[in-house]
Image (cartoon, rainbow, N blue to C red; front, side):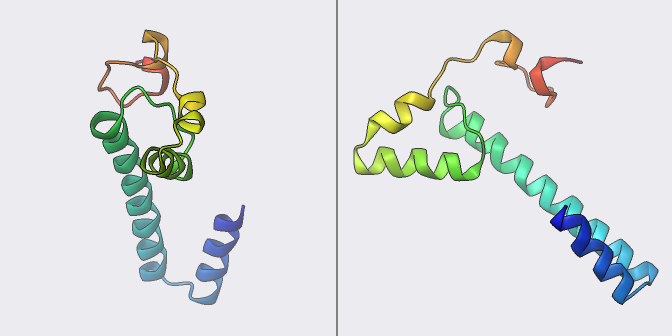
Length: 96
């Protein structure tokens, strides 16, 4: 809701096509960056770790560095085929 409100205020302040397009490009690029970070974490950092977001992954990394494996062990659960393990489709849950 905060993002929608901010976008509306930007467009109201400067209601031009250029502003709308730049805002749309910025939102799209941040979405792609966030997706890419999740992809990298899943495929290159630890594919068995189930995380809820980037802060969750940061806590996981911090816990591994400080030797506190109990916090990261609770979050680790094996992925099942229903959860999309082994699929590169990018679809949630492996559904086509």
